[in-house]
Amino acid sequence: MVATEQLASYADWENGLISPHLFSSEEIYHLELERLFSKCWLFLAHESQIPNPGDFFATYMGADPILVVRQSDGSIGAFLNACRHRGMKVCRADEGNAKAFTCTYHGWSYDTAGKLAAVPMLEDAYHNEIDMTEWGLIPVAKVDQYCGLIFGCFDPDATTLDAYLGDMKYHLDTNFNRKGGIEFVGGVQKAKMTGNWKLAAEQFAGDTYHAPISHISDFSIVTPPELAEERRSKARPANGFFQNTRQFGSILGHGTAFDTSRENHQSAGIGGDPIVDRHRDVIETEIRERLSDRQGDIYRGTIQHANLFPNLSWLNSPHIIRVWHPKGPNVMEMYAWVFVDKDASP
Ligand code: FES
Image (cartoon, rainbow, N blue to C red; front, top):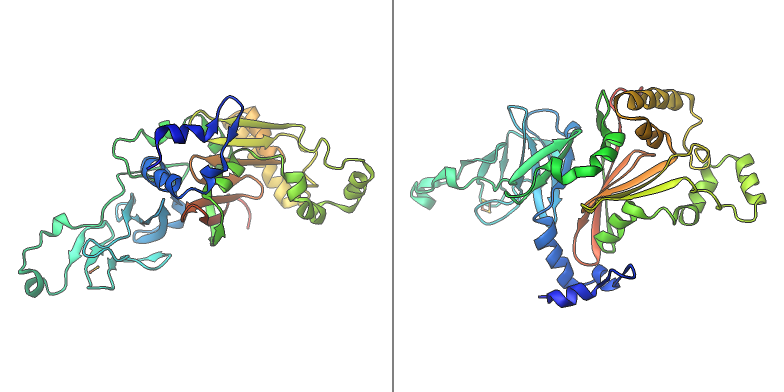
């Protein structure tokens, strides 16, 4: 176990420095599972992924496999995807619709509310002595949603989701609070990558600085030739690119950066398509009327990247959501979705 003094030594608050050890230590990783992922509200799914009773999506909370299931009364349940008999996953599909989840090891079967519904050879194997009500799937203690984004929390004493999101709701609203709602389209893209999950999360929370350099090949593809020529003719083409960028760090651990200028739309590959531009005009007006002018500016700006502590990230253009599942101190698995405004044209 890492001593408290040693933990404290990994951050030099006065000089704004942290130790690279935080991104590679096995011990820190296990502390994170124990102290962060078991306590925080974690993103599970979007409600558009599971519209009908029995629809389910399999994901993770920290290192634990989770089933998110639409219930027959329309509510959403979330359970550990682990059989109460010997711990096998009761569902091995990524998503789908089910009437029940039957473990393929010895056949215990659970209904979509997680209740143990059937045990093979109940009399022969258990003398009919199992109390079925005691052996349902272990539920996630708290499940709630904001703008259709479903979150779960293992800690029954945790604060409400609303309080957890806190001042980041302003930016969640800017991106996801639409009159007609949003929906996820297509499937989830998954990729296992070398690297600590925090490298990705903090990148989305605050690093805009990299964009003109790391994404130069991307920009060179989407930038119209005349604009590229103009940029090439300047001594420092990236200079001023993000002069209107603002950064926000929440005391709750969430973070974002955004650029409210429109001048860089073309070089960032945004805008220029009349149908998309028309839709964005409508949404921008709606945001200004229903939310605020400033949120309209952020929506219509070139880019926003953000991270909701600990591991939910998004970009506003293109509309992408990513979750960084921790898989060890030096491995993460990314789940990524594209989201759209529900009332956007096909
Ligand atoms: Fe699931 Fe035995 S482990 S039925």
